[in-house]
Amino acid sequence: MNNADPAPAPATPILSVNNIEVIYDHVILVLKGVSLTVPAGGITALLGANGAGKTTTLKAISNLLHAERGEVTKGNIIFEGNEVQSLSPNELVRRGCIQVMEGRHCFGHLSVEDNLMTGAFTRRDGNAAIRDDLELVYQYFPRLKIRRASQAGYTSGGEQQMTAIGRALMSKPKMILLDEPSMGLAPQLVEEIFEIVKKLNEEQGVSFLLAEQNTNVALRFAKYGYILESGRIVLDGEAKALRENEDVKEFYLGVGGEGRKSFKDVKHYKRRKRWLA
Ligand SMILES: Nc1ncnc2c1ncn2[C@@H]1O[C@H](COP(=O)(O)OP(=O)(O)O)[C@@H](O)[C@H]1O
Ligand SMILES: [Mg+2]
Image 1: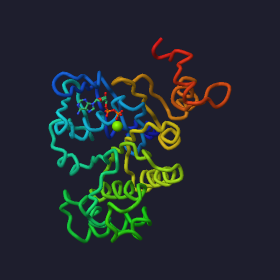
Image 2: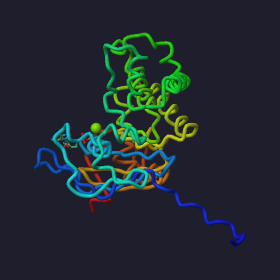
Image 3: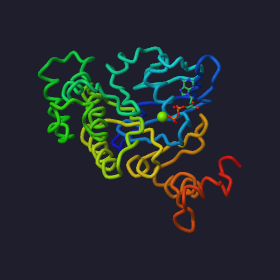
């Protein structure tokens, strides 16, 4: 033993995706060597336009590609130190990694509370613990408590997104793969949902990989971001650095050097992205 201060522990990744390639239908190459890491206790954003490959990346991690005739053909995925490509989605959920699908999938004919309870199906720690967690979900989402008996299909888009996240929480996850939580929601609700994500991260220690087209909001809540274009990571960095990057501002935040630009101007690609140069 020496009495020197121990070196600070490196930020251990809870998840690392290493150079994965994904092919759909045996021929359609969609991810062309994607690598990313999420530190334990982090919020990491995966950004990119529609069709960039965000959902494919999340489904590769959670092992949901088979249902889409997709396959990881290269690379590997490590969750908490173990390779997870060969696990079933349920086994991965049991180990603490769960995806919240794009489009806020709920069982429309079930009540909000029954939807939440379906999220506990992989658990074996008994009803009392599950009830406690249901109360915890209601603490984070008071709106859901009010709407607990309503048929989920008749609740608002924001409430359905909350139900989908709440349902994932019922599996007691260490990590949530959250696919486009802002999609189709009014800005105020988007803000409300991201604030809850932040609280869950800080208070419950849940790590997040957040796929978003809404670069602006994602980079305010994430600590680190990756930008995906046509199945490749073209840029990554601390969220703050990305927010200040001229290309990101111009192409993803819709703000050029001379102030706000219309999306149409940005789409004219006046300047070539540095990462394509
Ligand atoms: N099941 C599938 N079969 C064939 N191609 C697909 C399938 N799902 C997605 N793709 C294609 O993969 C690319 C990436 O899609 P996706 O991962 O959904 O992107 P994002 O989530 O960033 O919008 C798109 O070109 C899309 O058309
Ligand atoms: Mg998507």
